[in-house]
Amino acid sequence: MSSSAVWRPFTQHALEPDPPAIARAEGAWLTDASGRKILDAISSWWVTTHGHRHPRIIAAIRETAESLDQVIFAGLTHEPAERLAAGLVEIAPAGLSHVFFSDSGSTAVEVALKMALGYFRNLGEARTRVAVLEGGYHGDTIGGMSVGERGVFNAAYAPLLFEVERVPFPGDGGEQAALDAIERAGSRGDLAALLVEPLVLGAGGMRIYTPATLARLAEAARAHGALLIADEVMTGWGRSGTLFACEQAGLSPDILCTSKGLTGGAIPLAATLATQAIFDAHWSSDRAKTFFHSSSYTANPIACAAALANLDVWREEPVRERITRLAEMQGERVSRVASDPRFRNVRRCGTIAAVDLHVSDPGYLADVGPRLRAFFLERGLLVRPLGDVIYLMPPYCITEAELDVLYDAIAEAADRFGAPR
Ligand SMILES: *Cc1c(COP(=O)(O)O)cnc(C)c1O
Image (cartoon, rainbow, N blue to C red; front, top):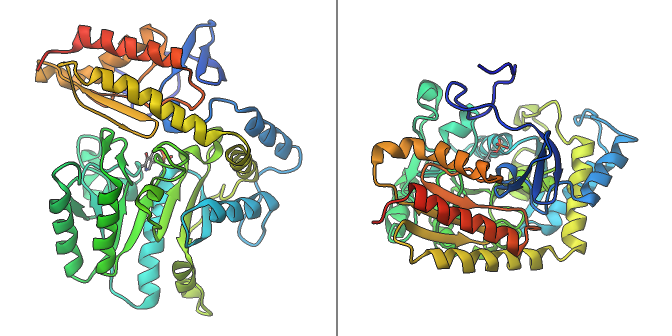
């Protein structure tokens, strides 16, 4: 029995031991209260990009807190938000001209969905349906779950979720079926938007599809007058190899959601970027056409300052070189694993590498994730498999030697848990 009052996320308290209490974070490492070090191979749930406590980002937080805390963002503004919005528009795919701030990936997606529906309502067009990729994940709010994959994670709430059009995952061999599904959904004339995680379905198991396919999906949806919403909450800020994944497809979405790496992972903030046309559809002397959305902490000045510092880091440090280097290091190591019969679907996109571990007893499968997690943690490694999918998504500062430790542990995990094909 735990004495903690905390109810933890995605945690079955009846089955899982009390977690280590982390007292320090630095670079790729966490240190617990007893001084034990843990290598953060998943960037603390995909948020930490450069490394924990990047000095420049921490300094911006400290300095801004000397003069500002939360300030209401309706009717008032402040320099960190104004500068950040301008900075995001400058680096985002062309055509995204307006920035709406919120505080998490889920809210960034909710805002995107509301923008898309508001856009068509204000134009007087009856478009209210949304198409999504099967296996997608967009957060755990009611809207986020509605547009995400259905399953054990949200079965209890299914009666509250709205229906969407589901497009088969457009991976190898699945492209045409996906295009056909968009064609079917679009031909009814009521499709408001296609929502995608570009190039990588994160929580859906690090499943990868090509930039060329992404471009074709977008084209198919737009051919029917639908908007393209890119959920770059995970793929953004270099994760997929470029600043935003859409760049690889030469694509400018109509709406782009960003959060996790926006502040380098230091502090919560999210932004939903939209085109001039979407903003303009809400521009009216009729107050009923207002974009009715807010959250209490919209555009928190300290978080905005952290994100501005992150933009400076991208501008002034060799971040792209670090990403390329990490991508290469991941690529070399993951391809060595490719010939191991205990692994399937060896894959990589940018800095993300993943393998499926072949386990013999399917009954065992349900439990393999938590067991693997415990196995890695015993070795001082923070790795959090998605079922039998083992992936590494480390901060960009990780060294070659640290990465080797992780791949050695993955091989050891295969010895312990894997079965040959
Ligand atoms: C994590 C994630 C979200 C949800 O973000 P939160 O900050 O956890 O609400 C949404 N979309 C994608 C693609 C994500 O990976």
